Every structure is written in structure tokens, then in C-alpha cells.
Image 1 (cartoon, protein in one colour):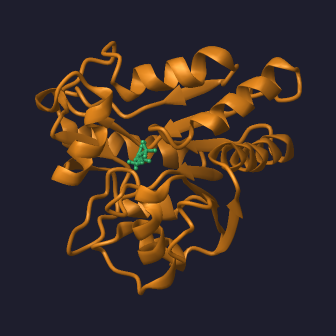
Image 2 (image 1 turned 45 degrees about the vertical axis):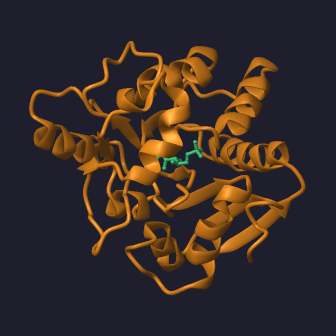
Length: 239
Ligand code: F6R
């Protein structure tokens, strides 16, 4: 596990973008694992800027997103489909991009279908992650165990409160989501986790300094051979 600390959140995003750009240049048909939320936005903006400057071509790349809310129409501005379109997909030339379907009539079948689609694409080359204040990655919430495959999760109160800022009111925040499981994340060949801000400092400390523990799902990353953690000073303040 490599940990790099930067002065600003923007520098964290640029460093993450650099890793993804190198990946795409090295392997133009890369399979990229993508995340939503505030943490990846600077990274996406940098990738868009390099693409617009003619430096980065995604035309052979495929992407799979980590998660999506259940029961939220894809056109809803807070859906992760809408987020990814606005923040990245509408501005670059990704060959194909997939986000799990949180409105599938049979959600268990959708979970299996998503894992199979990733497998058929050859697996994820590089996975981008944020981290929840409670140490979740994807929407794998604190639990007594780790779940391997894509799963339907009940969001914890801490996650509902954290994501409330995107919705009009707390009651509008969906309570369920579909998320790549820990096995799916760990199967990625390389993982890049970005965290900014003081409210991530505890989760980062638990992830990198304590034993692997499913109450802090990100701690499993310590068992992965190629993880890079990019932090701003605030997120690194408790290391
Ligand atoms: C998003 C995701 C979540 C977020 C995490 C941090 O696709 O899977 O694990 O990365 O909740 O969210 P932000 O970046 O908004 O603090």
C-alpha cells in the first residue's frame, strides 16, 4: 500500500488523474472502475481537460461504476447515472460505460449480471474509490462480514446523513443501493483511493493503521498488492 499526502484536495484529484491517464496510455483498451460522490470530481475534471486538449483518448476504454441507488429514476439528478453523465461521460469519448441498474425488476439477477459483465470484459484494470466516513468503499457498509459479489445494501444512518446534502430533504435519500461487493473491488488489478477533508481522517486511520476488520470495510485493502491512497493533509491528519 502506497500513501501519498498532498497540500490540497485539487492536487489529490490531479494525482489520481495522472494514475488513470497513465493506465489509459499504457493500455488503451483499459477497463476502468469508477466512483461517484465529491471525492472523484477533481480527478474527472483533470481527465476531461486532458481529453479536450487531445492528450487522452478513451475510445477503447470501458468503465464500470461501483454503485447506484435503488428505486431512483436514472433521470433523477441525484442518480449515479446522471452524476456520471454530467461529471464525466458527456465530456469524454468512453467506448462504453456501465452503471448498475438500481431499478431492475429482479435486483438479485442484476447483481449477478453486473459481476458477469465485468468478468466478460476481462476484469477491472484500475479501480477508483472514495471512502465513507464509516469506512465504506462502494456502498459496502460496516458489517460483521465481507460480501464477495455485487449486492443490495441497506444504507446506514451515517451514509444517509452524508449523502443528504445532494437531496432536497433527508426523506428523499434512498435507503437501498446496489453495490459492487468487496470481492469485486479486490479483484481489480490496481486500486486508487482518494480522500479529502477532516471528516475522512478517522476512516483513513482505521483503514491503514488497524487490523483488517469488516466494521471498516476499506481495511481489506491492506490485503491488496497494488493500492495507492491519495490524501490531502486534512484526511491524513490522524495518521
Ligand atoms: C460512490 C461510493 C462511495 C463514496 C463515499 C465517499 O460511488 O461508492 O463509497 O466514494 O461515500 O463519498 P464522497 O466522495 O461524496 O465523500
